[in-house]
Image 1 (cartoon, rainbow, N blue to C red):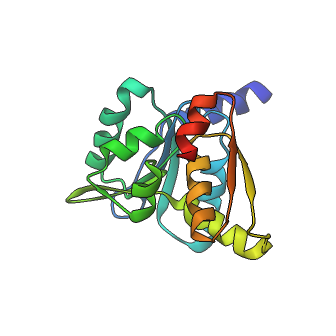
Image 2: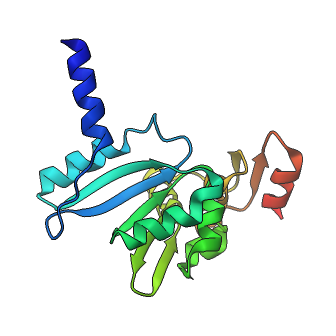
Length: 180
């Protein structure tokens, strides 16, 4: 019976029906995404709120990113979250950018409209909220890493008035580029 349950689950995940005018599609694009709990969490929240949305994770290779975005827009998706390794690609793809995305050079959320996709970087606001709740001293900070989230952390810390921000990364060049 375990095998039947796994098979049934596999079929349930392999075929998704989006009922027009009942459910709106939202998602997550990245590679890899098999490990993510986002669909389970988001769909549980949508269900609890009685919201008519379906959240799906899509594994998208780098070379297929633009086609995947156009496909989601063509399907009438509301928007999508963007994760590794596509945040900079999404920045280049978006027709419009919010100020946080412009500052970080990375997009982690895209909303679709008739005019195309608008890119946002919600990490900056999230980090600012966390900093406000923690009330750390503003005389210095150390950021580990130099990727998209690190860029968001630098922007948030600059906004919050940190006097010195140090960056450590595996590759010195990326840390220096972010520090500049």
